[in-house]
Length: 496
Ligand code: HEM
Image (cartoon, rainbow, N blue to C red; front, side, top):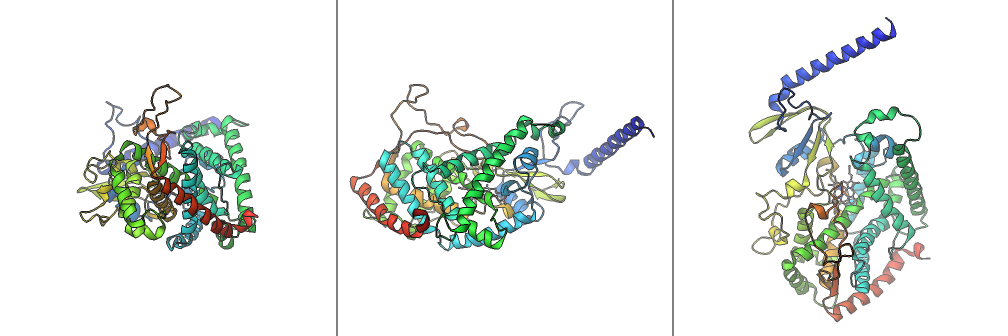
């Protein structure tokens, strides 16, 4: 058979097989597929059918049924061509990796680290950092509050992970990691490159812009993490038992579980969101401050030992994660075998390879669960006795075998920062005009105030942090001076 005929036969065979497959899959499963968009006359849904079926879940019960109870089948990740083959060819990014061995070991080791976090091991560190944050806010009245929050969120994770405490926010490593994480997230967005839509362009050889961009990011990120990991493992950064050292002892010598860290950006997003809620919905603040004052008094700042006695602060953390979730769509899971799921009395077929989003936004704004869902009301999580309602469920940290492994650390970060900020400050709108328009700044919680990408980050906005009294400001400064001495002990080697 000559080359041309062979090619024609192959094309015909592929077309036939494709046709049989489509026909079969339509006959077998059409009636059992979940509802989709209406089709066009004659063409039906042909123009809408994605390469892999995509399912959007907006009900927490169903999300748990599929992603938790059946997690053996629904815990892989879809491949985004650009991330998989260009940005992260070695698959060091946990959040996008399939369920390979590296991912499995990483999650196992992190479970151990987070058990220590749950037992309170990182609380002193988180407390120091939150207190330092308060002193930064006191020093400039909140002028650079947005950056202070970035600093505290990053420094907390970096100290625990690499012994890299960044007290000023001007440290070159801190700036580099914040910039690198932002760049990594941008490149991981499905919309980041034409390669995600037309992977066939891969056949074009040479230094194409998408290759150059990914390569330069890879080089930058590798250099950064190699430096941080080496210093953490050698003990040069600090005398602490860091997460990187724990990984290095148990897994690869270089402790290459770097992408555990890259997700910390969501903590900053949640803190920025909390401040926006304070400005737009201030009515709950006096009640929160009364509760904190009744337990803590005026002579010291809140600490983790107050946590069981401050359910309202807990409710604020929950409402922050609900109101504007840091991952508005969640992260996509992929199924690894066929399954049939029942929902509201009907059965739906979910073929192997399907992409499933438990859409956090939809779940957390379900009007049956959350009355007046778009307003910020922490007391929705409290019962008549002002205690936390039982049976709290959230989609903010995802589900099943891919649930956010940093949850215990993130929750503590949010709790201590929110408690300390509310004890020290009244937060209000800034009267300064918006430099872009010359008009008063227009505060907004609609979609246009958020980036809307993988991390649902609010755009920068001004806020004023006024100390509730001169005494509180003084107490906070004094407490920090005392704490700094302890911090010097904790991070001795870095300080020398
Ligand atoms: C408020 C803060 C945070 C939020 C809202 C958040 C939320 C999430 C969500 C929704 C996922 C996807 C879960 C799924 O696919 O079902 C995720 C994954 C992940 N998070 Fe977080 N996260 C936060 C903070 C952190 C922190 C501080 C760390 C690290 C210390 C972290 C590490 C990770 C990692 C490594 C993954 C990928 C897990 C995997 O694919 O197996 N996160 N996070």
